[in-house]
Amino acid sequence: MTDPVLARLLADRAGFVARLAELVACESVSTDPAYARGMAAARAWWRARLIALGFRDVAEREAGGHPAVVARWRGAGPDAPTLLVYGHYDVQPPDPLPAWHSPPFTLTARDGRLHARGVSDDKGPSLLGIEALGAFLAEEGALPVNVTVLLEGEEEVGSATLARILDTDRAFFAADAVLSADGARWRADLPTMTVGTRGMAALEITLRTAAKDLHSGRYGGVAPNAIHAMARLLASLHDEAGGIAVPGLAPSITAAQRAELEAIPYDVAAHDASIGIAPSGRSPAEFLERLWLRPTLDVNGIWSGYTGPGGKTVIPAEAHAKLSLRLVPDQQPARVAEAVAAHLRAHCPPGATLEIRPTRDGSVATSLAGDHPLLLAAERALHQTTGTAPIRVRMGATLPLADIVSRTLGLGTVMFSFATADEDFHAPNENWRESAIAEGFAAWVALLRVLKGSRRADYAPG
Figure (tube, rainbow, N blue to C red):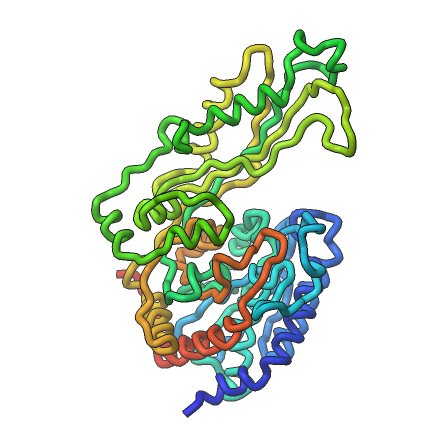
């Protein structure tokens, strides 16, 4: 017998896709002030939709940055747990535009996937979860648990003011656990639950070798070139095997951790082929160790000199680079950033000057307790809907929310996203599997059914 709430959701699939098209049309790029109108449009869209679905206390909360959209439903009673249901409405820039096969802010169906900026990260998964909650209110007039909705507008810029938003009204945001529609599942072919994330730190550096740009004929051979110096400096960050050369950043991996990784099936060759890289030859355990348990240090952008049409024979005086690190447990963002800065200063070429500045506050790596009641409920729901018990995995990416709500509200975060890691979020042609709509609806409904009758006392520490 089909669950009536799930039947309602599936019957309205076309309506869901139409609403998703409206939402992705809001050009809500948080990092670029030129998109302020799109950010405001996304907030207005969400406020209207939450009201239409039956939520109360729908409002915006801000703390000096992009506002969050919030709402509540408190009809399950004081003994029922309260979930802080999280998503974000901001998206990454669509650049480079010529690489898109369809307009980035127009939802386009192609080959079983929906394409648009933000469709997978995180507008589709967020809307999926909120619509499931709304279907319960429409069909049954109630939810199995109390819910506070938090739709953030700064996730793509490191959740810069989220902690302050939460701290300004702890009573409003008080909850027993966080259920996140963000975070992305690892694979579409294997049910998983993510129980840990890597943290993050980021730096921007400027290297100067002269007071001004110089003519390459008049000064070539006698004046230093900032691009050459920057290339040498950045190359010093890694050893010949690609490992991080900054002292003190290599974590210890235990035998037990390696054994857990060896039990997880993974086709490394297929992964390498899917992203168009040469075969790495790594074993599945080695691949997962590098992805989940080891830090990274990447150059995300570098610019200097002349990059326009044609040529310009100039020796640039300045070069710039953006760096980011993914951190593992027990690494503190500020300390790691300073270790990298110290390495850069020590390797700065003679005569050059170096300016280093952090570009975000950073997040620590997080881990969720294995007996967390919401994690157990989510695993049970996935088992019911897929017929397979999910395995527990970590995530190589960072969910700033998990660190922030742990520090600010003392809450654990369960990721229940139905985006998938191979859907090109942050890149051109971001996409979302159409099959995730039915899969996600079924799982959200199953989870809420599992939670019916649960109590706040179940979430008490100890």
